[in-house]
Length: 377
Ligand SMILES: C[S@@+](CC[C@H](N)C(=O)[O-])C[C@H]1O[C@@H](n2cnc3c(N)ncnc32)[C@H](O)[C@@H]1O
Image 1 (cartoon, rainbow, N blue to C red):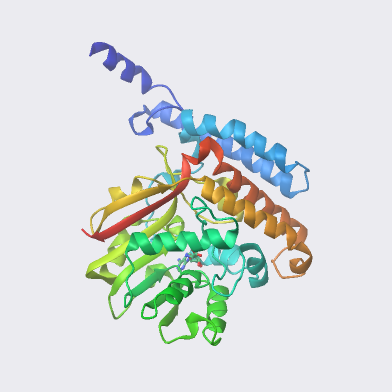
Image 2 (image 1 turned 30 degrees about the horizontal axis):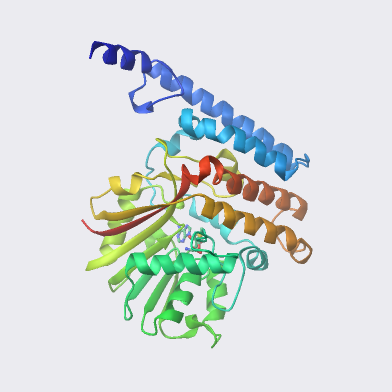
């Protein structure tokens, strides 16, 4: 007993490793300084790459395969580059307008080529599910939505809210399988809403039926006059800064016996996580919640079941997106990215390579996706 006390007494003065919530002030501050230093070195590498430094993909990947397991296993606190990522913010949705400009309102043709754009599977900007034998990106996305249908227990006749609906891929696919399901989609991205409005005029699209309603607007301001049987939100809570407020809102949209399925990138390490590079260039204020964060917020909604989806699924998805991104250069290089294409291409290659590789480190067991089935608390 006495030796345990001595050990935890010593532990709290050692920076970088262990539970940060029990650290002495000096150990905590030292850890934050080290996290800042690591972030600056990652940014320096990113800037050099964006500026033209040639690093073969295999070398880039080896560097991450060697370093990430050490960071994940022994000093995950260094993977939280900013203080804001360590706590909930005041905002339900973070940096929405900047996020749309930097990321979601980029040229549609580029997203079509990178993510894929097929008759039923429209561009889908979240992981595919490869563990059921998918041999290509499209199949992996179909398998992923099939799993959502099963886990959320979707039944014909349901009215479903897709909170952050992307290009309407999930509603379109689910409506193709259930002739009486109705969907309401909410999305702030004007470009993505324009894509859906075109599909709503196209008789071959299930979005053109009266069963699909689209709202262009911010998650934080959403209001609906009717309540839903089911709510799904896929790949959106990475932009939510306050889970408490978000679940309060979702609960107010849900019928008394309704169900919610949240799908997000999660990390199975003590910290919330972010990346300085993605914060600056890809997803402003994006964050990867700890796998336990959703179930620990159970005031308005409670988690009744949860699953961890191994990171290899996102690794394969991001690798497919990178291949498609590289292959589409000739046809998308003249589009308007708000910067010259050479710079844009290198920023996005760094992003797709970085994330694609991180998901594969530690056999995908630390950094993957979480799915949470929730009901009224
Ligand atoms: C990673 S994408 C996922 C899209 C879709 N759920 C899917 O799986 O393909 C995130 C989506 O959330 C939307 N989004 C992000 N922040 C939002 C906000 N504050 N209000 C409304 N939509 C938002 C984006 O425009 C985008 O469609």
